[in-house]
Image 1 (cartoon, helix red, strand yellow):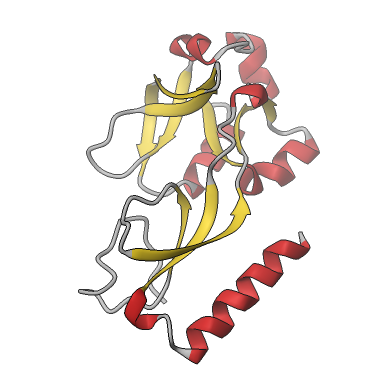
Image 2 (image 1 turned 180 degrees about the vertical axis):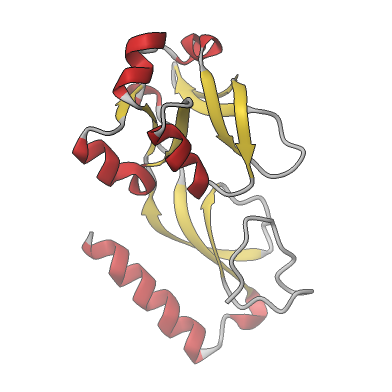
Length: 171
């Protein structure tokens, strides 16, 4: 089990299956969509009270963002505006290569985060974080399983993919 957020060469690194959130660019992989992922922009209520609740993604220019990115990428969040996916630049107060620590920083009022809803749902339910801009969340981001053609015939791989599909179909 290799947990990381970098794009891997599955053949060269001997990876049987990759679970990813986002869009996949490698057309040589077999991709199975598992679950539609809703992204949410959220922050502590006190942060929104002090800085103002954004009504449009462009309003984020006046906010501190806690960003998740791979090394070298620009600080931007993707939104669906007028039916088109657009990247909106944000001012990153802190950038991390793993999204987990950003939740804690948002809970301490250090800025807003844009993360998959499952990562922050318990904090939204408790009121510790408040979401905004839901109408602009991209509607085409999936959790998917990707694997190579040569690994496709493995009984273990087929069983794992079937299990994952069943698991997220139930939710």
